[in-house]
Image (spheres, rainbow, N blue to C red):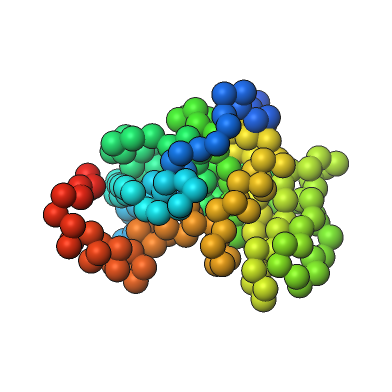
Length: 232
């Protein structure tokens, strides 16, 4: 693996990311959440995409893709490892979202190409990165109150927001992915909160990927509605 070539490709790709609001984007009808994990000791990459109607934020479709992992774990280059499975799940969707949340970083990355920016660029959709941990940058300590925020700064540049979504929970790291401004990224995450630490799109994507109780209950409810169909 040629790390220098990979770094150069990352820098060139990051330069293509659009950091302002899409001129055609107003209010979404469908918002997607995307989540990536690994199985079998990292040999299998699993990606889940959940589609939610807006503003109800009800799950209307989901897709899961499992593929052989194409690249080893290399710190700082995770998007190259994750996006092939995300593309595989994306290609299964029966409809496409107007806005995409990715569980991971957007431009809040040392070379400004986290998985949310990389994948958003590949599918050319307005995309927001919603990460649970800081990858780079500095920020002032947040007060404990829900809604507290601070800019995430790196080398004199605002690369994201650090935002406390819930009391007694660690903050989220929200950033532009692609075709969304920094302020709009925070705004849309705030619009998709329903009392949990994570916004509903990525919370549902995680629930689908990990077969959590909330997803099992959703499936049980749909089993009683024979006219409902979701492509799996």
